[in-house]
Image (cartoon, rainbow, N blue to C red; front, side, top):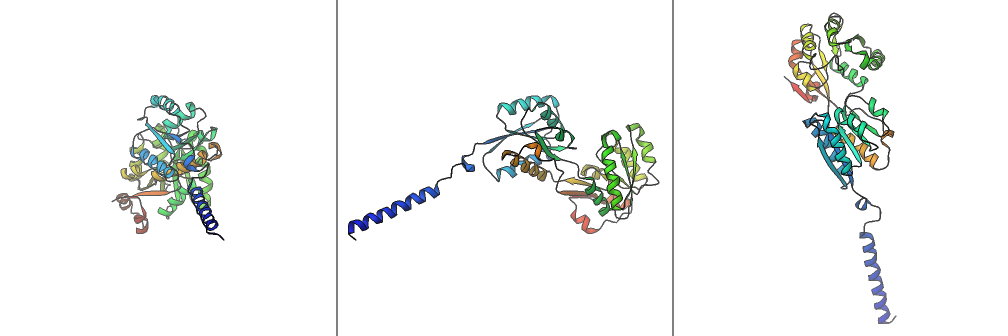
Length: 321
């Protein structure tokens, strides 16, 4: 082989090497780096800690996976009149998906959001989402079975459970609870409460029968207006109350299941991720919180002579001594 031919072959090998490196180092067509950005409008009913935690969890979940997301945050400050303006702004800014946090924002989006996909959070139940063609989300309520299983875990000796409910709001839930309670060996005593005026009589009917009072989400039964009467009944009769959330425990309920709001945001982020990548919102069923946290009131436990194992105390998110 001549010197010239040797040099030519060497040059060709070098040129092919550079071409290969350049090809490998170049982003492939259609990768996430070249995909268009996605704008998501975050509309929250209130500017309070749980709402902020949901937003943080949502943003963190998505931005850890891709950098192409941009977020437009708006807070309604509890004013439903601001919702229309917030939705209009979201559309003008080119939002391709809505995250609504709280019932005010969610109800407005379902009515006025048009065809924009909606992921909802911090709402009581999924009824309205299931009726919509463009919505899904994460509800606040834990499944009935989860609630009763935790009641058994925290109060294993208390086999008779009283519950108050408005049939217009919770008839289906009570029927479900009756079936699950029977399978768990729990005797469920349910009393209807048609209005706050009938609450005292319903409470008194449980005084000699119930071992524990199970609080369920019910606008008629458990509200700021009825809280004092229910807590007083609990203490006077030494019947522990399973409350709705940590503030109820602070006020005197024995315990309550609560949520990890950052993780709720991450759950919504997972749903949004699937929608952005081609899933229709209404093909993703609304889901409950996947992470159960709880708070305990040890002062209430001592007063009612309830012994809570140290392992359960250590596992609580918050303990009121």
